[in-house]
Image (cartoon, rainbow, N blue to C red; front, side, top):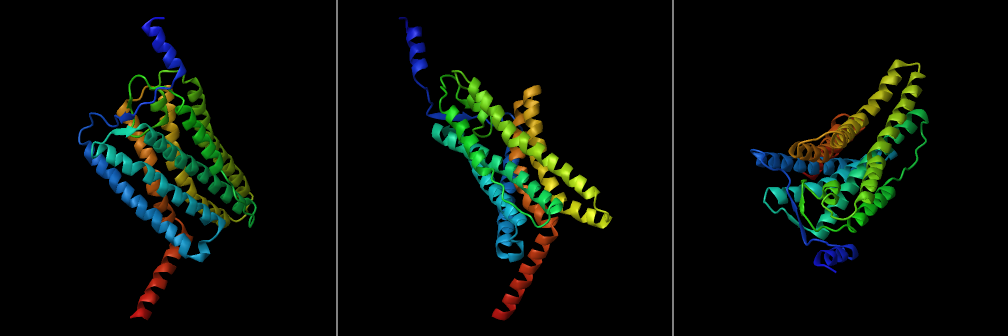
Length: 314
């Protein structure tokens, strides 16, 4: 048996796992450090905004309703997802520490994909909540999608762990993204591609379709309401959620469709993908704090309560 045949035999019976990957990230972009500073600002505001929203919902008992428990879950997911992604991104590129060990890469991938999936299904749960509130008042139910998302992500990582990496170890992304990682493998990746499509359909397409169907049902229900004032009030309660759905889903779906149907410059794809992962958690607490009357009233109540407390302590 020749040396090449021996090498192939070893390759077929063992998995070649690298010690480290290299994140190529943003390349040849002028003044890219300003973009990193912008992402740092986005992260700081995301943490402050979501912690503030979590605190308001926790402290004000009138917000202890199914609707705001879902908002609480979304804020917590946004906080965890941003913390899983942005600090490591800044550490890798702002301080030029682009090498990441194999196990840390898989953990990085798990948390980013998991929290993104939970955010998607939480937005679907919010649509379901609005549907029940408008079409079947006073009837609320829990909707659990987190376990399903976790199973999908663990399946994805399990398949990544069965790949051999015997060639390039340069990941053409700003984090350990699933597709750029499995494309580096030198053995069969057909199953990984199938699972990638399943995850895309389960985490993005199905929730978006169900949200669309939910709002079709809500529109039909509202058309039967005689009072125009009641219609406007019901639509107003849905406006914040529709903004969040548009901000989260449209860029993600657009990025994935563009990647499949056309050739996108790597820098354009990476910048678009990084904004897609970071801007929704940044905007969600702002939208819910400024566009939702119940939250504004709760904030005013907290301010009055703190004002009275300060006066009594003086």
